[in-house]
Image (cartoon, rainbow, N blue to C red):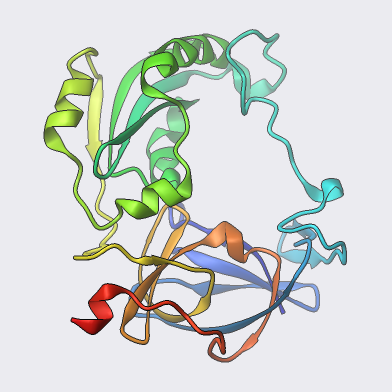
Length: 251
């Protein structure tokens, strides 16, 4: 078996996608679920196509060069010729907040706004404005990004995942804008202490926030970037690795 993908829970329950002899099944990640996979070797996750899986033996993970999709808009600043059909759709520009005080600007097709924010695990967000297409949106994003930034890495999200958003800092940021709508999200994390960053797939599911999976294991809570699981061969059973314990495990 191999972990070949994941679902963040935006369009259904969160889950890991597990391939076994060409067939893909889902391992549910609902709170309270017992997950029990031991990680083996890691290699390219291959190709998913309509419920089937084509494996790839190349060592690069999570994907080799042949199976890596490079999104052409990833670093676009609006100096483009609208290369994709989706670029011509209506776009929303937004601000996202990650506890306690990390912020970013982003854009997405307007109909995907709520989904995009949940995919990223945003704690709060503000829809700033809606524009006709992706090129205009990227131009505005690039201008705002000089002050706010446009990228937040998963380790930064994990460091504050047990905290709340700094209300004063969020208000100060929004004071320079006139949002169309604001959002607050609750992922059911409910942690008093920072979880330990780790790569494992065994324990009791506490919550999923964006692509961060929170697992309780041996008295500690671990934060797992689900992308870091993609490509691992797995077998049924608990991990046999020594894991770092959180301070809360000794309280």
